[in-house]
Image 1 (tube, rainbow, N blue to C red):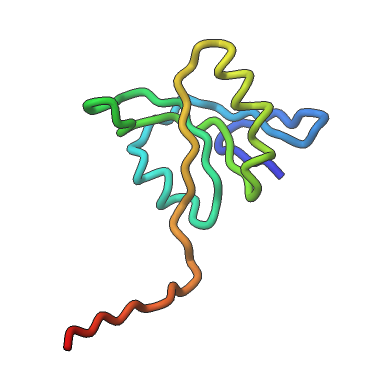
Image 2 (tube, one colour):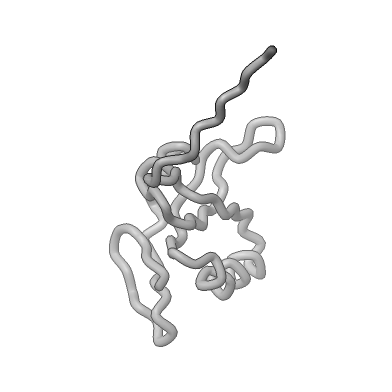
Length: 98
């Protein structure tokens, strides 16, 4: 299922378009949507690295974002797909030097 933020219009395939007026850092979007795939319109880069963007859509499965991503790409909009931080505990790594 695809979700967005702000005023939304649900499409027949279940995806949602969002109000893309809010611009935040990439890290801020990731923090807002843990355990979630996030499709952003890149609004600012630093040496070719995206640093700010506007939310296009979110989903639990990145395949659900393909149609929306293609429509933005076809319009010439620079996008990025990222994943919010995991809320599940991660395995600890122990390094020992003998």
